[in-house]
Image (cartoon, helix red, strand yellow):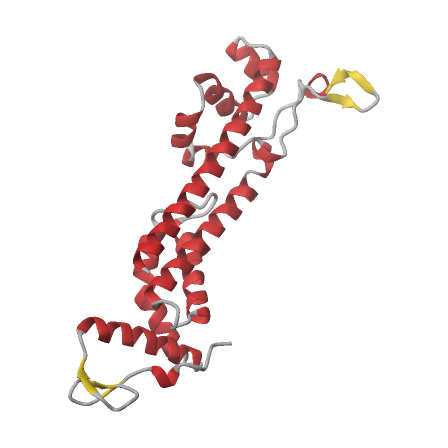
Length: 247
């Protein structure tokens, strides 16, 4: 599973703290050189199947992973879930690291970032399935009856809050986003929809036609889709730029 090459390229240490390179030359190791060598040696030991080395490396980098996880939000999950995704990225870094191409620190940072971003994108797609599959209630209720609309058949039925655009919990976590991208009417419609009010109830409360409520929900979907797509792209670009600078 792990790589078994490159071990011969690692420097060894003498009892007096000096390093011996592959040719037997002695040189005094700088603190930075020692840190880099320690990281690489840990990775090499991991490739050799040493569980203790893997545990030690994961433990040493957990704080860095946790710090990076603070910059990301995983819909429907808590902070530890984001950290766990980062640790998966770190494990992949150990598995795929190539010492001839970059330092382990830079490669690990890249792998952790990519894993977290991938998890965020996946969670966003899954959590917004009800929103993405939203169907206008003003479409024909039956293929053979262009006069009857869906809203005519279900206007009197209560909306299941669990099937609303987003759940109440998600709404609380995303309220800052909604405040930024939604109009006052759209925010009010979404709030009432999530709380389980029917189209008719929302329209009556806001003194609007049910068609206006339907249009508002469609605008909400488009705005949220656009915002999330732009944010994910921006986060990915920032992450890649940061890795490039530290590489």
